[in-house]
Length: 92
Image (cartoon, rainbow, N blue to C red; front, side, top):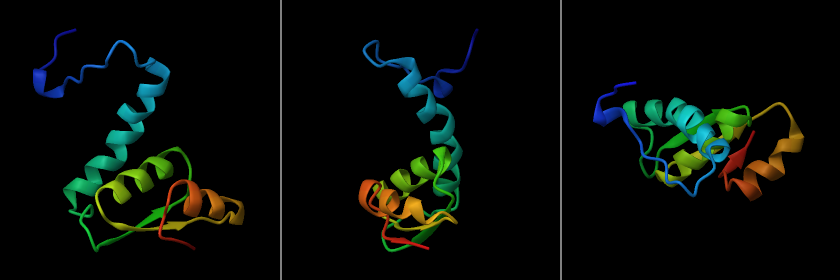
């Protein structure tokens, strides 16, 4: 396969592909809109609906970019995970 170097990411040999793959798929799915719409800025609020695979990554990226993150989920059992593990700012 031939690809432009701007679209290639080198994966270090010591990282297992099953650990890296979610960041390449889910990571780009949530990272792109955060950057495109300028949501990853300190002081802005970002709502993440559903705490699933994409939701986990979205919370991590938005927090890393400085945004205040509100997790919106219908399952109260996700509250502890959102607030304590992912360090979301609030849960609805």
